[in-house]
Image 1 (cartoon, rainbow, N blue to C red):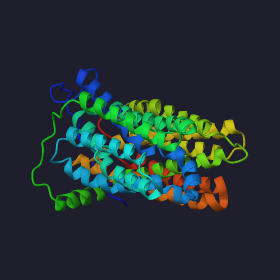
Image 2 (cartoon, one colour):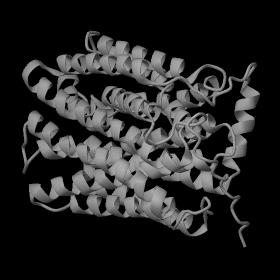
Image 3 (cartoon, rainbow, N blue to C red):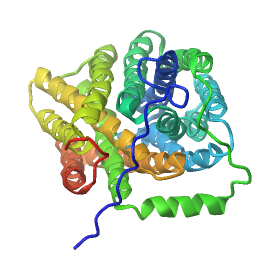
Image 4 (cartoon, helix red, strand yellow):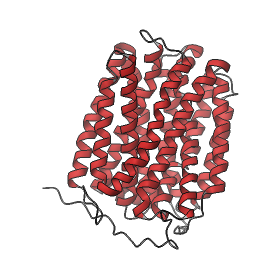
Length: 417
């Protein structure tokens, strides 16, 4: 028999002098700032996704080779997050996130100007490294500063910002690329990311509960990571991040190729327009976050995973409307499940929340890189059904993991399953 999971920490009173509490100005400013950070991060990271068919044509690449323009960023981001989490224990979180956002915008602007495929890959690699200072640190900031009773909504709004950024990065770059080329599209996204970075720096309240640690060393990093990996509930949440993100990115990576080919033969602008379904992620993340606060994280995590699975299967339908509906359902389920899982990591971690968030995001972006690239190798010989088969395998594993978390993981006092 497996040992029971350790209990989640008790909830302290909602004292506005110690916490960012829902309904207070600091809570609103923090939510807006982290929304801007999520927008900047995901628009810069995923602006190349709808451009992959154009890059494949211009540089003479296969779909799997072209996917490296995204995979190299997410792979390096995955490992950079670990060290950013270590830095975040000794450097103020706002400073680290602000520098990361500004530098990532600069590298995106450089990517629009450097010649050649390898120059583009190099700037995308640098982007992945510097973006590591945002995702895990943002999650840690919210888990540390926001009172637990409002954490679900705050984390949901942050994930909503990532959804809005992902949508803008796809839709706007597709439209700009149709008229001015892919370089102009990437440059335009870099400029938007810089504006969002400046808004973040202006809005985010300074940390009230953060105490910098001096002399943090790599041995501390590995000790902390080991402690988190020994906790069964956290391990399951890390697995969820790997599977959910891997499946989601794989569908989006190759949907452009699928929809540009016969029988659909859509334009680049039309394909980009389909990614407007990303807007569903904005509402879904905040909505699922509120429902998780009310009904329990396990139940809502499982619900989001079920919706993702149904959406993936629906993309196998022939009519374009059903394919778009499947992508929409996938998007709704993914952002809902991700908002719940990421918020749950912060609640379960007993200490070093930045490192717990970093491990979740390491798994999250490793899934994006490894499963996303594997999807390209299956798309070449077997087309869209090969991609769907891979993703449904991921969803089957995710459903089992989510069900285990729902039934086995203890809940915070007063929460419901």
